[in-house]
Image (cartoon, rainbow, N blue to C red):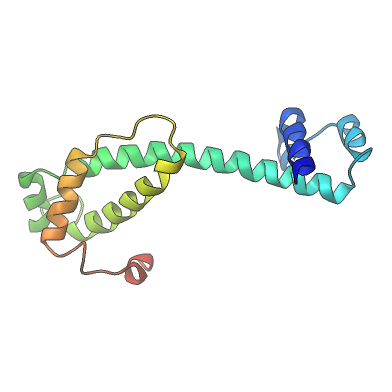
Length: 148
């Protein structure tokens, strides 16, 4: 396992991003072939690509989730929440519940990947409490939520 990690580290240092993913020069490929077969090199390149994409996904998800926590938190006040319940908001209370559940789960997952501090959840958590008081948080299960 240690050798493949060394190969992955070398590929990460040598590779450039091309139209079809990671690319290494023919000279670098030939150098790797001295110790590795083509299949191993391709597998290592795929691992490096997946790792880079996962890092990028975590960064983008973190940015999006932080913004959604802020936006949804705007409905955490009593007045804004009542407008949503009455149907006078730009977003329905059911949609608020669906998005809040997804963002909450995303925030839980992002705790593993986040380098910086998480967003201020005060208003967002107030919205989640109000949704729970309406029964929207507990009334729907994960199976139903996945179909939304």
